[in-house]
Image 1 (cartoon, chains in turn red, blue):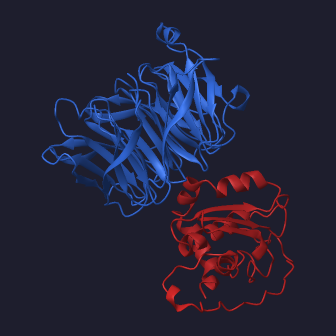
Image 2: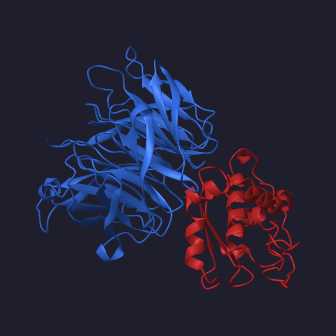
Image 3: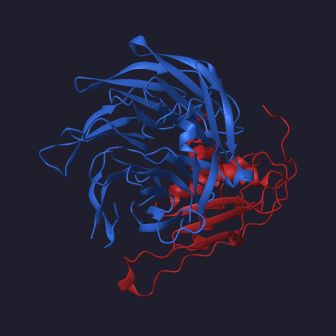
Length: 159
Length: 348
């Protein structure tokens, strides 16, 4: 058990205001699927709780709307997140939380890449490789302790 | 044998549902499809089961699930392999065990369980004579097991050398030389006998090797070439000297022949070389691709060209693609979408 927090004094930012989605004015398109955009993906992940602190990834600026790239036509999303400290050992947990939330929220046609912001982590390449190895992620998610931790972080994001 | 002078197409024969989670791998029973016996293959899944599928002879286009091997593995079953005799099926699981199943009059019984790996077992392979089994896993090791009387297995060697998760093991088709590929970006070649096995070669970046995880490897029919696929989005072809390989020493060095770049957009999880020389690849972009040797103008030796690309072959990542061993150009693909598809590569 680790008793010392990796980052005991995180900087907490204000949450961005939430814009209401405007209803489509053209009702003949009522059943057409709206393309998924940056804002929608951000809405899925912004309230994920940081594993160590009672703040969301948005409040800690671990994830921002601009750091999300979406191409709905290609069914592709790339999320870049910034751990609060360079040696953050929670980086893989945060990455896993992002991956699980998007897996549960986006259509199955989507391909998702998760990475830490370049230069933001001491083991950047190693963390990125783990987070994008589908087999490693699948095995990790069969570990009940890890799944409990992830689910706890994801709970506030199902608003 | 000239391939598809007039063009070819990939025909979908059937889509098989049944698994309740992603299908990771599949393996054709090597003995069927000979002498009119129905084609059989096994598939394994994140739903912790293995399913045996058979082509009902009366309806040539119809596949049925003949058996579900369940209540044995307690986690994802990642890989499966039939013994050369077709009588035994080995299944490798994230639960750190490898189970051996025997077909007893249509029912599959688990006759042995191999324990030893510290964590997820990812691949299992039988040697050509069916006397040896190899397994590998996230604990970075490769294990060699010897078949004993009564379907028991004895571990004869635990091979350390890879510095990361080992993704796949595959025995050479005609000699007892073992190949492994890993998250450490290398391919290792292991040779020896009895309980004395060594890594005799490592194919890494200095040898024109891959720059990211190597997911799979496959040999051509004559065993003098192999193809490897990787997270680095390339396929690499390697070759060896066949004569030297079969002369007593049993091992000859491998060298890089060529790299197929620019054809894949996402990780390539599976590659399989057919007995006729067609390389099939299955990737995370949901597509199946076929490559053949380019016979037009040998410059610095053989090169390979794309024969056909089938986009959206599945709705999600393709994890495994395997040619059947029969006459027709049949192949099966397994996907994250939980289905298995049976295809025929046909001339137009």
